[in-house]
Length: 328
Image (cartoon, rainbow, N blue to C red; front, top):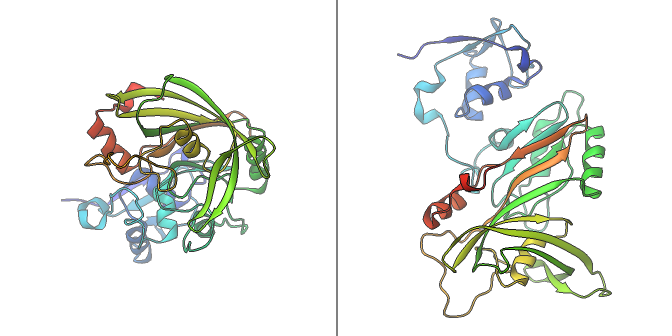
């Protein structure tokens, strides 16, 4: 039978919010269920009632009821547009969080979640971050963005000073951004550089980028690097891609430009009438911001890796690609 536990806060957990402490120790415990346990007084800190934003200190004792005994109360499903639909913002943020310190949050963004607002967008990261304002009233700040359908690493600053430092690092390209993509066909050469000019166009389906020429109105230079990690015959390839500039849809346009569009890309995937989308593969964008290496605002570096989203895990399994082959 499950019993109540008394767990001591460790030295390296000083200052953690209580909800984040539970995220570390009980990752399957959903935010809503945690709130019920807090409201009913079943969770206590040094014998007293506490709230989700209570900061814990080393040596404190946390009373933990048998949260793992009721499997139905734990939402362990991976985040997707569907599974996060009815969850509170703070709960979704906690589920996405893969790294934090006093200056930085790093999230693993799911597919379908926009980073900022726009036409027809009712929920987005910038809005959700309101749920994590600190005691001074500061809201975490976006310092870069990734496309709505792209999954993976999103870095967010916790303070104004951190935002200035991180924004400068992105602007001056003092970062290493590694993306994983699955594309149609196999690029030749297997290790290559793509350099073009990109022009933004307005279409009925939203902004779309096209390859232009130097001197075209609004044309910006875009430079990407790719290498083939593995392939399925000559039909599909797993690429590691690095954008050395940060243009809208850059990797998606560049992949299509060399004749190897990214699977599931709703804007840039084109094929002939005889080609069929592979069975068992979801028609979602197979582009994932896998890893980032960026200077930390306080010195040193942030080096974080984001696990693959469910639809890409499914495709990796179907195609026989092994994540461990590349390593991190």
